[in-house]
Image (cartoon, rainbow, N blue to C red):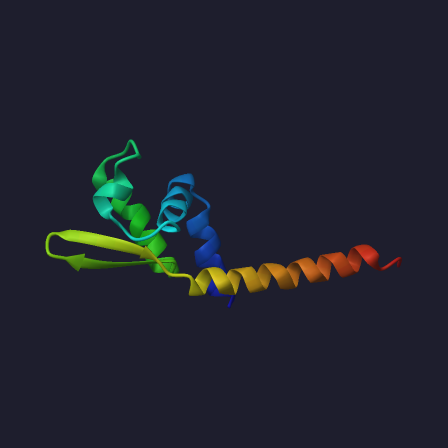
Length: 98
C-alpha cells in the first residue's frame, strides 16, 4: 500500500495534474481538451498525463486519431480509506488525556 500512496501523492503534488483530475471528474476528455487550458508545450503536458497514468488515477484509450482520458476511481477510494484511518488515529490521540 505504501508504494501506491507514494505514487498517488507524488502525482497530486502538481497543480496541473490536480487540474486534470478535477476536469476528468466531470467525465472523459480528449488529450487536446485537457491540454487547452494549460500554457505549456504538448510534450510537457503529456509527461503530466503519464505521471497520472502511472499512479493509476488516469486511463487513456486511443479512438482513431484521438486519445481519450478518463478518471480511475479505485485509487482515489483506496487513498480516501487510508486518510479516514489516519483521521481516526489522530482524533483518538486528541481525545486521549495522557
